[in-house]
Amino acid sequence: MKKDKILVIGACGQIGVELTLALRKMYGDANVVASDLREEHDLLKGTGPYVSLDVMNKEMLHVLVIRHNITQIYLLAAILSATGEKNPLLAWHINMQSLLNVLDIAKEENLDKIYWPSSIAVFGPNSPAKETPQHTIIEPTTIYGISKFAGERWCEYYNHRFGVDVRSLRYPGLISYKSAPGGGTTDYAVEIFHEAKENQKYTSFLSENTYLPMMYMPDAIRATIELMEADAAKISIRSAYNLSAMSFSPKEIGAEIKKHIPSFELSYEPDYRQQIADGWPDSMDDTLARKDWGWKPEYDLEKMTADMLQNI
Ligand code: NAD
Image 1: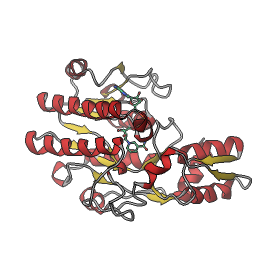
Image 2: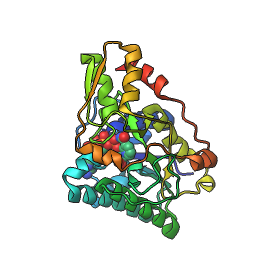
Image 3: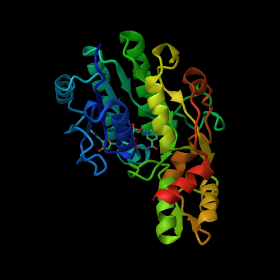
Image 4: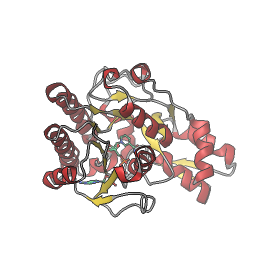
């Protein structure tokens, strides 16, 4: 039997650091190779193998996969929503080519499993905003959303055409304290905690009643690992699963923080990210993830807020 050997690409990002540490606990430190363009993140130092990698260089990636006997890849490198709008062609190029490089090497080397995250950004203003279903109108209006939607189609195509076992989740906005967010539209929900603790005030770049689907990082890491551990026969979606935990507005998270820090003051100055948020769902229907592989979130707004404020 082949031994699991995992490559995490984009391991120094908001998700990558925590996912790499979680995978190292499960599979053994030496069996999870972390890689990124950036310098190794402080939290990863000394915890396992680290290589410098540009995922856009397919040859280098291929050599790395062969040299380390990689059997699974988690591809987390991407340009996120807010950053993507500043340079749309670059975002398209990086988000697409990184995925195509990984899928094609998975096919050529007959790798066991691939993980690549999609996003709630695949939905657009014409999708139903509340409890957005798995299968519905998908007309993204940001380049990030367009690249994620195209990526989902490529994943399903590589699965159906070539049998690549690729799995994906449409993550909501992710909230965490260990590593900083990387330029998304939901970053306000991380910044707000840091500012509340340091300065007891925050100016939100989204308006007070902008609802978005959100999730605390421990739930996102667990969902990712549970999906990847699930029996392949249970995976009915080979594009990307809707995934849900909570939905709140800046006003609601502000009120929750005020319960812990009564002097906290929240103001609003919506910028270009408001328009991105306005096109995204308020909440998601993740019935299929629950049914197929037993997804159940643990953190709601109250529990997450208490944990964030305790740990920051
Ligand atoms: P991030 O920006 O924090 O991290 C991405 C990492 O990829 C960075 O460390 C960056 O240095 C690295 N990277 C960029 N280009 C690279 C390249 N060419 N080669 C190698 N590494 C490269 O992003 P994240 O928040 O950790 O997101 C990871 C994935 O999850 C992305 O696909 C993102 O679209 C998706 N996602 C994230 C969220 C969220 O709220 N964080 C929500 C939905 C989907």
